Length: 358
Image (tube, rainbow, N blue to C red; front, side):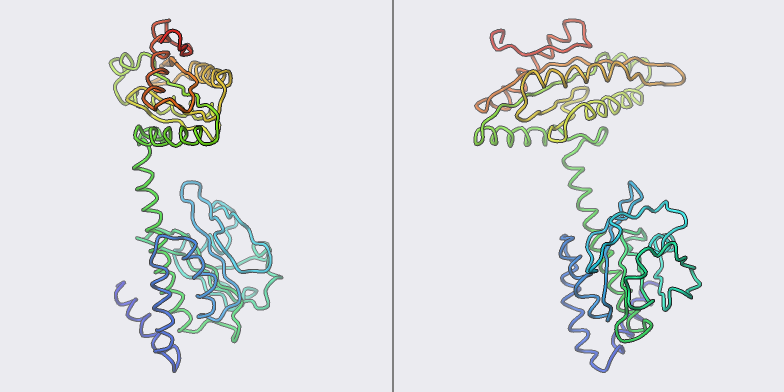
């Protein structure tokens, strides 16, 4: 079915004008430009080149954030402002949301009289900015999943989109959708390579890469690094009593609590099975201690519930402050020593590495 549709589109493009070879010569390089992992390059084609081929004044490209059910405005050529964020949960749904739900191209010859779907005036905040009442709203689809929306508005030389226009729009929507889908897949693979699958924090390998970069930055620009090591108390007992599924739930929750206690410039990592590490660039020992104590309190005040039973959680924390001449191994070993002392002191506490006691 898809092959028949593609063949039909190709025939329509070939018959689009008397200069069919010239048109194909214009389409081919654009298809090559779209076939990449650079969203800005793809957006440029959507906003600058495709409107010229189809004969419209304005274009806007939105990318779908599936996690938050939101469309983000990537690029546009309108001389006026557009909504930068469009929620898929809006009611009544906007034309873009309708296109996403139907996974089909919405062509509007006259938006005032359009019946299927009906587009109310309340949904057309910016209607007065356009010279004509026509537009094309096409969902960008990859592997039957919507990845974005391309809007083409204000046909220049006619009141409606003809068969050639539709063929071009559908062809480019397939090409753009495939490329955006590839970008999302590539980004997902990159995230999986650098993050821990259970907690979403950076993994052990990435932790050391970031620590090396922060040390290099400290050598060049000055400053010191604080490092916090966190260990989950009694995780083995929890696993033995309730099972590893509950143990995983504990690790996930503690990972979230650690992330909530630090700044955006800090890096939280899952260092090992039940151990976490946090890099705090250019941070005093006093400020790092405040963050560490906040972690201990946040975890101890956040028990988990399993089969109506509350399981109290706690962590032991060790930390220290280090200059740019320290090695990554020295830094982790020293903070780990402080962590060991915290464990020996009864757990659920913070201990600071003291060089004199090394």
